[in-house]
Image (cartoon, rainbow, N blue to C red):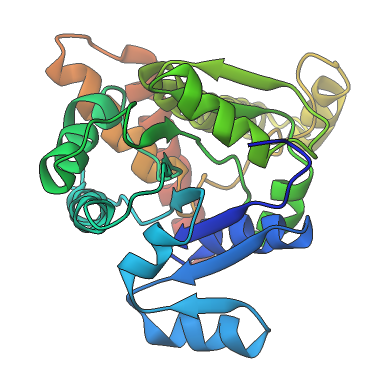
Length: 292
């Protein structure tokens, strides 16, 4: 692949991440096709002029790179990999029927070692092909805000490419050739934990300033003045410094719970992250009580 060439892109999962990824890459002149199990999402995209399909084989056989953007929810503190594993199985079956070298790039948030030890073997088992030889595999985490996903995709702070091998990474880097930001190429495992490190730091920052907020209230001090002044330190910044509300949304709570469970099972006690969760619960309860 040559960076200036238009590329063929497949998107599996047309939710917030998949939609932003596909629309963003289409804006840059690539040929994009969307696949999703929910017909309503495809009908909406089709009405906007985007190409869609309900056939997984079409996505795999017609693409240079396929981005997997399916949900990975957290249930009872455990990450649920059923959607992404089922997706890998169906991708493998479709790969068996194509003679093209396709790179499968996982954007779904998954814990360290998942791509290498769980998804890659599924792809090989159901395709009968060799990863890194017959097809490529990358982990390409997203760093998007729900309310501004497309803007964030088109203006990233950095792009992380976790690669199974150099060829896989080279093809994916070609997709991002028009972007002017640092591109970090690393291992599959490292790319997975970079995503968690980013989300968990932001969650920790919010809980820290919520704790400062609670101290200020107890002392009768103006918490906003404290947060505003602290945020002027360039090392801190404005995001997450205004206390009085918990972190919520689709990512921080689930990723925090999943990571705590993951490292605990490895024999590591994540004391700080447990405290982050506790502070968040306390501020959520205080906020709920105040509104009753």
